[in-house]
Amino acid sequence: MQTTAVKIFSVLFLSTFASIAQDSPSETVAPKYSNEFLSIGVGADALGKGNAVVAQTDDVNSIYWNPAGLTQSTKWLEVSLMHSEYFAGIAKYDYLGLSHSIDEKSTIGFSAIRFAVDDIPNTTQLIDNNGNIDYDNITLFTAADYAFLLSYARKTKYPGLSVGGTFKIVYRKVGDFAKSWGFGLDAGVQYQTKNNWKFGLMARDVTSTFNAWVFTLDQETQEVFIATGNEIPENGLELTLPRIILAGYKKFDLGKKGFYTSAEIDVDVTTDGKRNTLLKSNVFSVDPHMGIEVGFKNYVSVRAGISNMQYVRDFEDKKSLNVQPNIGIGLNFKSFYLDYAFTDIGDASIALYSHVISLKIKLNKPKFDKSVEKL
Image (tube, rainbow, N blue to C red):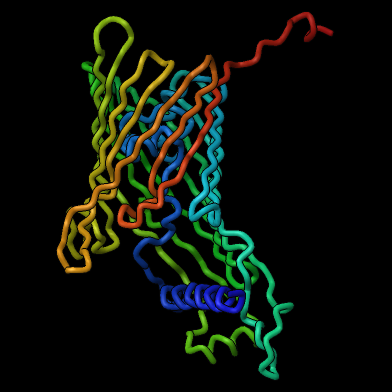
């Protein structure tokens, strides 16, 4: 059993680098699903609504969803935390967000994202030069993706119209074997009409985000790649092409007792070629998703959403439409917001659902005693 497990890890390890090698030639490339960890989403409230929040987002998590929404974050400081685990805890996904209202018209924000698989066995040196298996040669490494986002948003002179932008730094590391640094820009717009309709537009990687990969493989590891028929990866650039998200949102009051319901529809338009989405072409792919929420004032809310609409084929080669459902709940007590979501990791055909919990804290500016200041 142990030998079988080691073989599986060896295949996975070598396959990962073979994939990177194919997508990282000396010339610039734009592989499909580049930096895809930045498409998972943040905040259990959004995940429970199928990630359909680009038009309605109005707090610290707007740094990720639509920086223009930061203008609705009027608190002196907002903090957001999220942790989730996938594949029975093998992969860990963490998020931290901070926002600060500068004045009535502008807000800044910072967030950090980490998606990683820790303690991966490195079995490239499992067999020594004499052909003997030595388990003491197995070492552990981490494959991790990091993103750091700095946002600024401002209300325009046109009533209801806000704009925002995000500068992001992407750092990806695969043990001591490979690493990359990347940079990109996001831009967002939000508009609220007089009858409380909200519309949003989010342009991710609007200028294309690049990752510059550098590989540092020793001679023994390179020999393993050659012996197993894998290409030796070369340094190169990887581009993430733009993604445009269009969104519409409406909130409805249910009587005069504080009950309400709301709904939003988002449409993601990717530009990296044909994907397995509801609408697709060789250039663009269109992925609609939607979410609803029912709640009482600002105290409690129940959410649901559908996303990842894909056509899948069964063993008889029959094609059918598959839809991913998502559910969640939110609770609020004074300045604390606790959210929970039960959602898939992003592939409805596998149905690997995870529990996601996030926390938001909204704080007013601290008040200092003037008598203490005089001292």
